[in-house]
Image 1 (cartoon, rainbow, N blue to C red):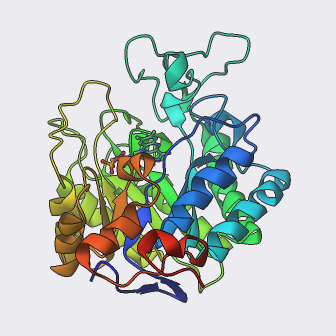
Image 2 (cartoon, rainbow, N blue to C red):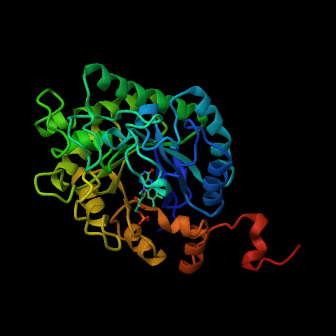
Image 3 (cartoon, rainbow, N blue to C red):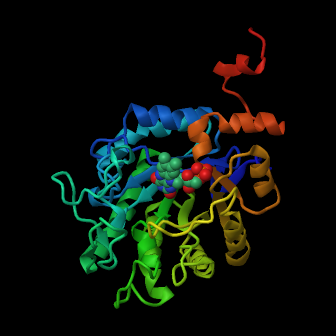
Length: 356
Ligand SMILES: Cc1cc2nc3c(=O)[nH]c(=O)nc-3n(C[C@H](O)[C@H](O)[C@H](O)COP(=O)(O)O)c2cc1C
């Protein structure tokens, strides 16, 4: 099953393995470069069915760090085109994750300490639902007003239109990991008293407006994914029951797949990480909201991935660090599972095809 095609709307992936979005922090002013071509391109050559970019900022202020990839102008979209083209030529579906970092924006890249830089010359003030800092050392984000909310919806929608122009065939909106849209969902970060805070309906309003606007910007044949944190792992926070309701609403506005992750709305949430630990969330949402799901998180073994997809626990697996370790994770998985997967003809001799 892992190597059976997955069709969503008019797009068919050659298997059910997706490269999980992973920040490379290697851009200047949001622009892609040779790193992105080689990094994403090699995972497409390596057999993944879907190759998704890292979190791609829909606005300059929505970047996690100054070195994030972005798609806030037509020049960004144009520069992404060769990357998209290469991924497609290598047989994978090119996908992009659209993101706004919210109150977790304006930090140094990990290898420079990942600390807030809002008060430095190259920094900026993060935005959020309420002036509650993410963690010690982070500033209280600027509480977003009506114009800011409208801008976020417009930015996601424009970014989706550009992504389509660049040739991406799957669009994912990042609504997890404590970033802007998750911070609206979670009562831990959202203590607004207007239409965007309080009840579940209100906290889900901005994420749903974003999803609806993105859906409208895309041609009908293209799939729309949404990544969520299925739980905050904190009492009084976001949880699975709310995720299931959100997934039902997301389905109504035209979302096709929920990519199931967890945590990161606070710096100290006790995440119960273990092999496949998000799979039960993906299964519950799939069954109770009636929508396709993907599972991510410590899915490292081909047999484990096969079991997840083959027994209907999720429709798709996202593999992150496994693909950092080995760009050919998918081809090696096929070999282990004795499944059919075409090695690139250029590399045929690696698998014993005689010299012609
Ligand atoms: C270097 C790195 C960068 C990441 N960047 C993103 C990102 O841009 N967007 C996102 O949704 N998750 C991001 N993640 C989380 C991964 O997509 C994935 O959910 C996580 O690593 C768990 O999967 P794994 O155990 O297969 O690595 C990142 C993870 C890593 C290791």
